[in-house]
Length: 347
Ligand code: 5GP
Ligand code: MN
Image (cartoon, rainbow, N blue to C red; front, top):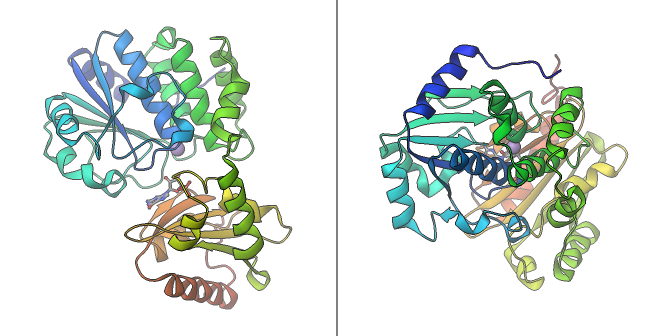
């Protein structure tokens, strides 16, 4: 039995908004991950089946590794088709905001988004949404935005609109945001949702292989190099960090997505409870963090890296050189050494 968790009044408002809208834009965060792109495509399929003129607009390109799902070619990428994206955003009566909750996360698209008169509807599972949405459906305790979207559809009595394409898109997000149902997936209701999705008869193994187990030789070599040569352990404080400079990335013909999953690897080492991965991008150093147990990388990223996320998976940015970034990680380690409870969440 999947319990309804969304306030009925919110569901009624959503239903009324949907009834009154024809043009709908669905958007998600920068560097879309499986949950962002899965929830966006699923909602797009469903709204089109409802007769809406629905489009997915992403702030930047969907990583190649996730481009296998049907509907991917239809996506408008803001950085590549700015005029078209702006027109869609401008003409929309509704904008669904999936898997993000701060303007920062839609990057260059933020101005067009803010300028649009559309009603903005948040469906998301990140902590502390910004007060910029007209209707807010936010459940940080859920595994994924895809799980939340399923629950929204359940309460709207629209599960019948989930066809095979929508089911596999929802599955993609639930799978990637839980590390193939490893973490964040203890709620038994998740498996009831999966059972219902699996009845749409998609190839679950294909989704896993495409999204989580396909790597180029360069990518595997880069990850090997990063772990062999660039992983530093901080045994005093249960931490580890990995850095990769632009030069190193170039050496391995880095393509977007090639370091996906790398940040999780050091957690396999007994005694490592938190990991910081820093990758030099064009304008700044992208920070990605993972932890286990009650060490909050959400708070760590919030405090040091203008970012956030979830208890055990968060990210942010560092503006400065890689040397300075490493010095700041060592500074964080020192602070934790002086105050071991610093990022420990007690519930
Ligand atoms: P990843 O490390 O896979 O890029 O991101 C892990 C989690 O942290 C995701 O749930 C994502 O939403 C969040 N996150 C990643 N980067 C940022 C960021 O720059 N700002 C914020 N607020 N959250 C981030
Ligand atoms: Mn997510």
